[in-house]
Length: 349
Ligand code: SF4
Ligand code: SF4
Image 1: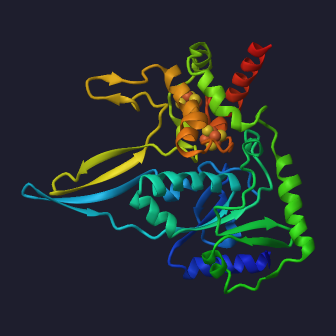
Image 2: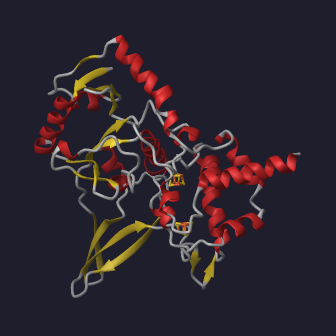
Image 3: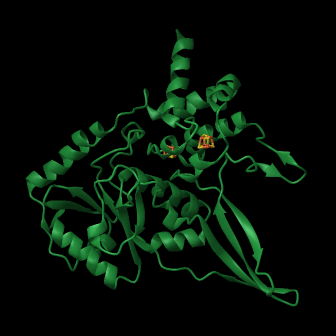
């Protein structure tokens, strides 16, 4: 573990803003919310934040991106992959969002072999920061994602006048090359351990009432509990916001777009979400999940059961974004899972 004085860290980030081939982005306070955005100066960083509105997923899987471009040469289509910008240097990622990115890596790189994602991911440098605050809707400690020892190039812990820096990769080590850093003392290493084990878990007001390892079973047993899903989804507006803000949701739709008046166009993709009414519509005017209760059920099943079955991950990292952004107040996974658990307990008695 290394230690860097805060002014030295800011000088390092400022140097990278002016010299790195990639854009440097980081967490900032926009006056209403915390957001990941382009950095003009390291002084704009707000690393003591609780949660950002969108996760850094938006840099690896943008809300809308062109994948292919084509030219129609008298009926002969010439396709070419869209030239990709380099990845980003992303500063200030909380551990739960690093865990979410590791889940996306499994899906997009290991399974789908998705080139646009892989290029951005492998060219990005992820600088994490241990949490100093948590939103009132977060429950990451219950999900085991409030701290992490993987998924980052560098991980910062605020020690007052300095940052302790865990180095996760060779690229992270090289990023520090031009900075004045020193080896952490035994006391500083102990202090980071104390923060991770005692301070961070205490930041959370909300908790799951049971081990997340039980989630797949609890959900499977409640697949046909339509009374529950209908009751819980009654006020849902099918706006899809809970999907859009989620760091582990990765569904997208593909559009073919012809540039009017030209012989060229592009294929692009945009975020999609299973709570939107048309998400499961297919040709022939069929919709596999026409009722809002079915869409609700699907979202929670996917988070806690389906993804676990396929990839071994619980696809909710407890950030609480869906809960805080749902105007109908019916998107809260912690509440849904606790209610299902309580029902199971009551039936067992
Ligand atoms: S649960 Fe809330 S955020 Fe999600 S679609 Fe329904 S109203 Fe929108
Ligand atoms: S389901 Fe909600 S709490 Fe869980 S990861 Fe997604 S946005 Fe965060």
